[in-house]
Length: 237
Image (cartoon, rainbow, N blue to C red; front, side):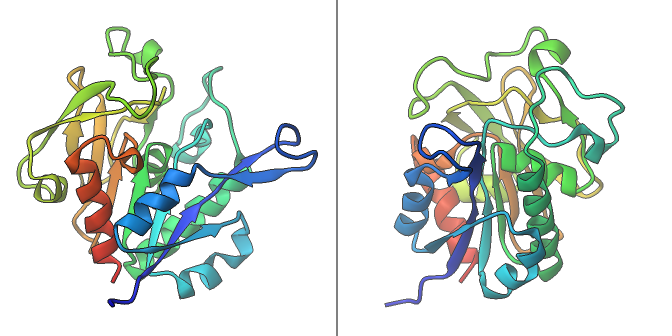
């Protein structure tokens, strides 16, 4: 049996209440399950920023997951934060360090939803802080139907890594975000767009595998979603 690569997944953090009376970590089980099905060995990464290099020494690939929070606008040069912006500074500090270190080592990186937004910022890009305000005619990107159903379609650009992986020019995807990539850094390619023009995917060909998608492929609502996870794990071997 082929050895499973170690795939680190960033955790979310929550304040006391609900599960525990003290701060706690959380992550949906399907993040881990999708890595297992794709052939990887998932490991959870707590937000120990001082230990980023030690984690990366042991990892073969990094998944930056999503969550109900935002990247600090100051990190991409914004003078003010939109009232809808919610921060988790310890999480962002850890994830930013992990992505930067992984790219320096050319470890495969997959950014999912908020993870794509963080990846875009690390690669020199900016974000739309609140889609309804900056794009009033945009689709409803925080879909009302369940996350394991499609919210809209995306058009995938031919000649990109994402197109090579998904083998289609259009996919139905779920949608759970109020922010999106705005400007991309030098060398970063946009590989998927929603019908309203919102950026749904980015990649950077200067690295072996550097991919971000705005939707949640861990729900595997299409064949393309499974192929994304499989390609990422294969690149991590």
